[in-house]
Length: 400
Image (cartoon, rainbow, N blue to C red):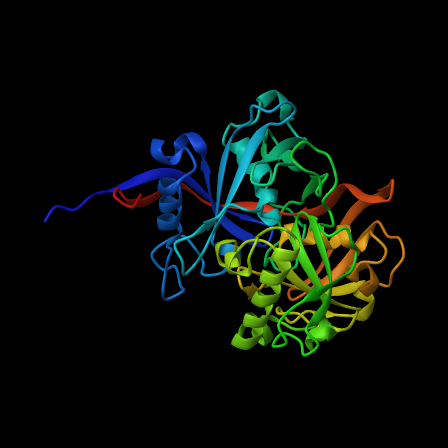
């Protein structure tokens, strides 16, 4: 019996923020996978090792969590004032599904570094030493991201002393700016709050809450996110992963909230469609400052944070915080009257430090109100990135 040989594809395995993913140059993909469609999805699924009914992704590059089941495709940008086009694919673990509906804010921190090293940025824009400004077009959501990448002796500097909770070792700091995070593809504002309200009463089944109504803030900034008060769900906001991920009923309840919120936000027409849109929206619950011990054993004191946030991604509580959700947190915190802002104490603020399961994170946002509508010019946070492995990834030749 004849067997199809494996093929090898140039690829780089990178950490960006608290996530990991397999990075490709568009031109390096097999021709049939250089365009969107079933072949591309099948290829990426096989690279990552999905669908895996065992939930381990043992036969692929995935790490069996939403944070480590990710792919990135980059190409030189033809858009004015942009260096690189960035396309992100969130690969489901136990299903044959790649979600292209949103961005990964954490991996955004690695895009600039990869683009420089892969020759996708004009060499004239890269200093011998200093900081390279990489202008990124986020193709999934039609947004601009600016990455400030440290350069030493003409090469990307990856080592340094910047520490990021949720990442074990220090590295070089990469500042990432998410420009007009609530704007549409042409840069116009308008849909930051899809319902037009800072607070909404979301109708949900009584199995979620007995009253059938949840007070929520639904925002489209960074990534569509539904914020809920922790106390309304019986939580304190200090929970770690096991408290949520080990509770099947809790996960089912959050998925119901996500589905009903997605309909209310206009992202889907019926709750049944949520299963085919796993990456967005996110659900997060918030609470005021409190002390707790992070997953690494680090003590987080009340005075270390402005509020607590726990967020779910791909059906599980995230071990730290998604970068795009951090943009949503920073944006909502800057707007008086949202649940995030109220949990942080209310009032005007340009930055917030929040506690998450792995520690704390600071994010800033420039928000203003124009003609009664809230807009945000940019949200800013610092992450780090590092190449873990580079060379080729191999897949069976008949896998796509």
